[in-house]
Every structure is written in C-alpha cells, then in structure tokens.
Image (cartoon, rainbow, N blue to C red; front, side, top):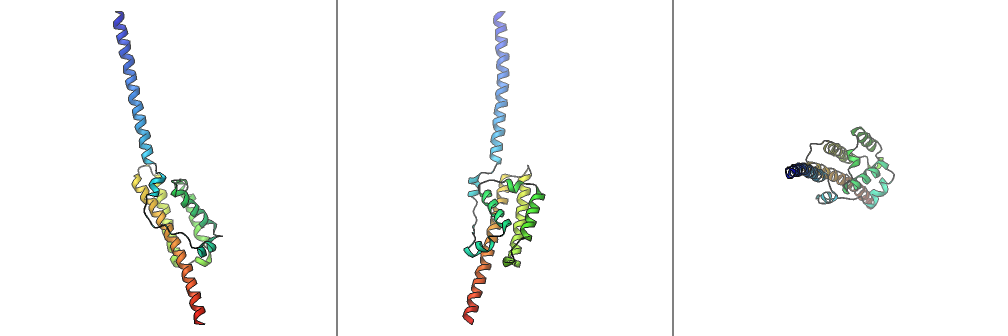
Length: 177
C-alpha cells in the first residue's frame, strides 16, 4: 500500500513538472518571436542604397538649420536601430516635420528641395505607421526604413546639386564679364 502511495505521488509530481516544462518552452518561443520581430543594426546596415552626404558648401549653409541637424542625428540613430524617434506619437512627429519645413533657410528654398522634403515627410510618416502597428511584418518595416534612408539621401543630393549649380553659375558669370 505504501509503495502505491509513493508511486502515485511520484506520478503526480512528474505530471506537474511536465506541464511547467511546456510552459517554459512556450515562454522561450515567445521570447524568440519578440527577438525576431525587433529590427537589428545589422539588418539596417544590410539595406542597400546610395547614401549621399552633404558637401562642404552644403554643410556650411545648413549649419544654422537646427531641425535639419536634429533630423540628421535621428537618421544616424536609425542606422543604429534606435527607432524611438520614428516610433513617437504621430502628432509630435508631425509638429517636428512642420517646423522642419517652415524653418528651411532661404538659400535652399527651391521647388526641387521642397519636393524632396515633401517626399521625406511622407516616408517618415509612413515609417511611423509601420513601426507603431503591431501586425506589420518585419520585412515591411525594413522596407519603410529603406525608403526613409533613400529620401534623406536624395534630399542631401538635391541640396548638394543646388550649391554646385550656384557655384557653376558664379563661375560662368565671372568668365562672361
């Protein structure tokens, strides 16, 4: 009788341990799923695009444009997988982008650059939506990051072209005289 009681106790104990083990496995699966959903710096570095930086003349002209400097810093953070700025509240992001557009220096306020800024604004707001919704695939989020990086690079390229064009016009007008 004593042996039967001991066997029942052991079976009872083992059945509870097996159930706990399956719960632990499920928790590990959840952790793996969360890790696979988060975007890593390496994944962002593997995104292929042409990254245009600012020329010396462009940097000097944009030195006092604080919103550009802030956005440039946030893009650098994005490249290190710090998505906090782009995950912020949409109203905060929209306010920043409105300030960004209104504080543009007159020296670069051209239609071409305004168009690039509008594209950048659209891509930033799209990325915000992709990052804040729970049911979005990681591949779509990475595509959104790629679009923002390309839009920022294209803005830099357009700013560089503007200063290059201005420098060429000055050279030509000097030669003509």
